[in-house]
Image 1 (spheres, one colour):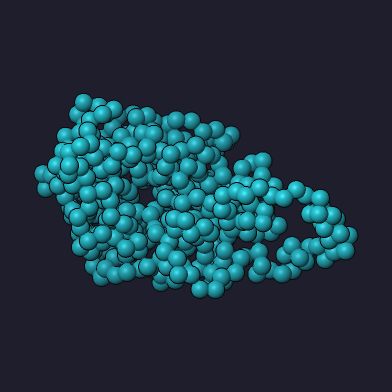
Image 2 (cartoon, rainbow, N blue to C red):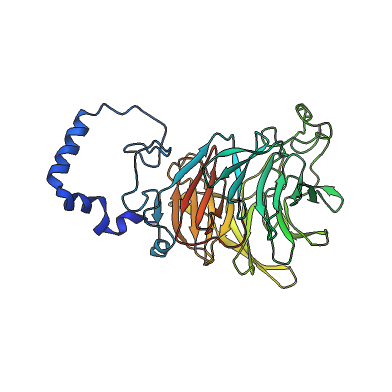
Length: 407
């Protein structure tokens, strides 16, 4: 698939044009002299901008002449969504695996999970301060805020979905289905009818992001791993009992199965369209001890009926870009109905970051990051800033559109 960088789509404002206007001869001569005197660059890790390697920190050199070079338009429609003069910014780094970013509109802060460190972090918009927001966090993964401003979290360790009430108490929304313990809830979103929808893959059944099954369970069949080490006394006795399904928590508290493992194996991120008539679900690869069909790294979409029943399930995108598999994880929609999906392309440098699809499933734009991206959300006072949780770091980019729904 042929792509072009957005800054190249406007030759009148390109770097080449700016050099011509300013006096190409003098500037070119100065540049040649500087390059001739510069020492040979040391070999470094792969970068999305390799000449020279891009420094995303605050001390890095400017990279944006008019459009950020790592914001790519695959289709002209993306140019109306990207924001001129806006650069990708690394807000913070220091996580072991950053996930589940969510924006609190009233407090004007971003919260996210650092899963292996068993904590949630918070970034304050007013001064950029980052601090530990909640620890322990139950190895939380996905977070979001409902229409009442209450935080929702999916806990790997405790295998449950919780809600942090405005008075500081915690409500367990779901920890079982059909009398059996959940696997490791991953991502959760709210519907306007007051229900919560969440995915339940098995990724928390590992030492790094939660706790393996008790001896004999799917993620600890040999029983050689002690899941109780370093854990509270109630942890380490669960065994995986359920397939990888998607569920709906009714306002009454009843938990209903809405998407089976056969329909979307290993479900991960999910989100509604702006009108709540469609539900998008990312399907990822097999988790620890997973004996099911296994996901293929793609995105599925369903119609949402007035009775909360899903129908017409189909493949939305296989997430193949230029022959590279860009495994999706977290999902969010903007107000135009475009779907923004985090991309995990592994060692395929230049394809990790974010993919943007139009409502018909056509890839229209990409954001390249130097790290694997696990999840995204919209935030900022105008909800026009895309926050990206990417491996060890948090990145942000202002856009020309707004996110749909609460964070």
